[in-house]
Length: 511
Ligand code: ADP
Image (cartoon, rainbow, N blue to C red; front, side, top):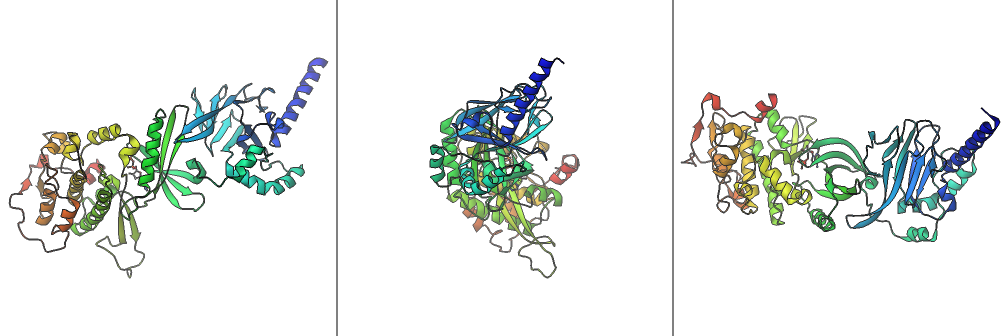
């Protein structure tokens, strides 16, 4: 190495040292000018290398090995310009938000929460783990108004810490511009991101439109379920406004037999895509479907107690002019109070180890979040529980839920649905359109006639003649009167040949 080369190298590394020192005290090259407000921060998480990089309100912030980058990361696996952080102003859910869109430019990759960014833009969110190459791991966080407020109260501590040269990890410090001072005076706002308010954990279940994950309210510690819908295009501000209005209405719906909606958020995931989040009351003991599968079928008294609660929930929804349209055992969730000693009194006809079961209807108002078209198409795709008028798309009323309630009642008692491809021909759809079903022997042999009577007044083609919730409450089976013999004269229990015997859900799940 020539003298000139070695001097230039030394100068270069001195420069890098200076630059790193500036950044590690929380000041990027750019921010030394202190003209632009802070938008976000990257916290280095590697033990021994803890430091904070500030991202200011600059159109593009560059990160890379080059000294000309706004944030210099001096390691061989970091590309000259490793990635760019683009500041974008997006209107999401009626709110203007300044967001950071990260674009990878590297050879060794940029990883967000373990996934490599591949030729896609990605909007960073609070709590994202961002890894550059193999060496640098950061936690990303937007600077919120409350951070600025906290910074003020923390300023004394932070100032004391900054004087201590041995402290490597320093709390972010802020030099307030007048506009930031104005921000400080504003009252605390509703967090605009779900990640500000909730910690999101493991998956609880998944469905047609969404995954549901465990969540915890960071302030109250309340356990919640967070339903995360599949990404949608962010192309219609009118729809966003509608989403906000509708969730506001649905958040006012509160009932013990309904899974309550607690909060809703729209999160941008790229320049063109958004994701909707619903924060729901968390239900811990799974779906009615799983209970039926586990027990093959439910006892009559147990079915009655569950069915009554479904009806109470439906009555409440119908009184609020909400039609569920997707009532099925997967959407009926259970909270079970367990019995810890035989002395504890049971509050219903439950299993030995159970004191009580609270039934909760999930997924009301779903069409509003998925889009009407997608919702109806999905319903019609697997229509086991769907009323005929939904399939023919000839207009529907709250009576569609009463048809589905009839299907649920049937399934609970025998363990298989009244309409299925397996029972065909005709096809499943045709069976529904003709209301063609039967009470097969031996499954229905020991079931009260009054239940058969009730089911046959729910699975009725003409919605006007189908029982409403109130009529069901008036029915003798629910009024606990002794069932009369032979209530149904025209409803014969049907004998099938062996090859035609329907399979219960429980048998199907063993296949
Ligand atoms: P989709 O509407 O996409 O079909 P679901 O709402 O049915 O999705 O949710 C999928 C699964 O997540 C459910 O079957 C259930 O197991 C679980 N789940 C849904 N909501 C809750 C909740 N509030 N509490 C606990 N688990 C839930």
